[in-house]
Length: 119
Image (tube, rainbow, N blue to C red; front, side, top):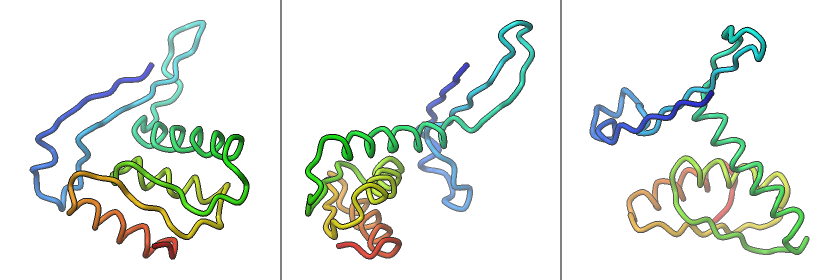
């Protein structure tokens, strides 16, 4: 069972708290008894799974010599996509971020450039 909550006010809280606006948990239950078996961070699992699916699609559908990848957005999903896409296409050195909020774009681009050596 997956539970997702949205608390937009978290974005306005003290940055030291580092609270996301979207929270999620995934609970694994015994099929036969309903007993809880595991409680997992659904936000992290969704972040990783979504990016992994995109990387599989890129690997299957894009030319092997692709020189540039565009990423729309600059938040958590953009950063996780960049990491996953670089696993299947390490050669592109240019990954433009398309984001209406230029401050966030600079932040994400800066993070991306520092961690992966890209423009």
